[in-house]
Every structure is written in structure tokens, then in C-alpha cells.
Image (cartoon, rainbow, N blue to C red; front, side):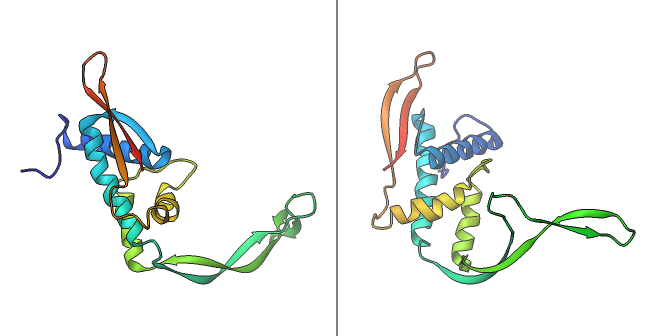
Length: 169
């Protein structure tokens, strides 16, 4: 018996649909799709959130050197005039070096993040893997599974496919 539903699609299309649905669910917190797709996405998302919960506190902090552009009172970058070897003059942004404490993942957390990247598409403005491990994982820390819920909505008009709403609990 196969471990997943075929959803009437070739493998590449099926994986693409599931990745898009997983990405949308993590980004928005809820999606509306067919019942069979919702059940497949529920399995994937529950396992991703489970690994995020397991690796919730598995990181250390480390001092890292960070360079930032110097900014004046009005918020503009401070520039310095320099001259090249052949006599050309150009402007360079002046930078300052500071040290900051940054979280660094331990190896098992890093492996879990990379496994999550398999199912989460890249979104232009935000890192959904960071959202999964830094916001959603700690939110469900006290819960032992069952991170998603399916509501059946009835038949879709047109093709009578059973619709469902999948949301994070």
C-alpha cells in the first residue's frame, strides 16, 4: 500500500501542488482545498511542525562581527571621498564594525530546517522556514501532535469535489 495519495496527477505535478499548499498554509495559517489534498497536506505539515517543536530550543548563541554603514542624524549614509591608483575619485560608504549575539543552529536543528526547505517554497519577502522554527514551533511546544484541523465544507459547485478548510489549531 502506498504511503501517500496519488491525487490523479503525475509525480512532479503532485509534489508541486503539495509544496504550494504547504507554503500557503504556513504563510497564512489556513487554506481551502479539496478534502484529499487537505489530508495529504495535513500529514506533511504535522510532521514539519513536529520537527520544529522537537528542535525548538536546540540552538546556541555566538558573537559575530557585523559591519554596518554609518548613518548621520538625518538617516543618510556617511560617504568618504577616495582616490584610485589611476587618479579617479569616487565616493565610498563609511562602515563601522560591531559585535552582536546571533543564534546558531545545532546540527540536528539545521538538518530539520533543511528537511523543511524541501516542502516550503521560497517567498519573496519572508522566510517561512524561520517562521516555522521561530514562531510556530514554540507556539505548539506544549502540544503533543494534532497541530492542524480539517473542516469539511461540502461539495464544490461545478465538479462536486468535496471541499475542506485546513487550518493551524
